Length: 79
Image (cartoon, rainbow, N blue to C red; front, side, top):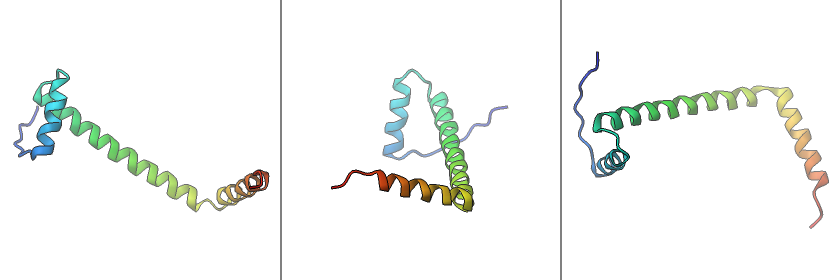
């Protein structure tokens, strides 16, 4: 069952909502879509941060990255 909520929008949020409504979305659909998209971006950001932390903790991977960086530097043209 859907739950009704009330929210006060500032000017920036009201302009954003109007842009979403201009695409043909209803006010409710626009707000629902924006909430789901924001939550998904946050989830992806946390997943990426966890992946970066895992890579940084992988000593073998770090050594390989340094070796590749060193090789690339040795291949760089002078000047």
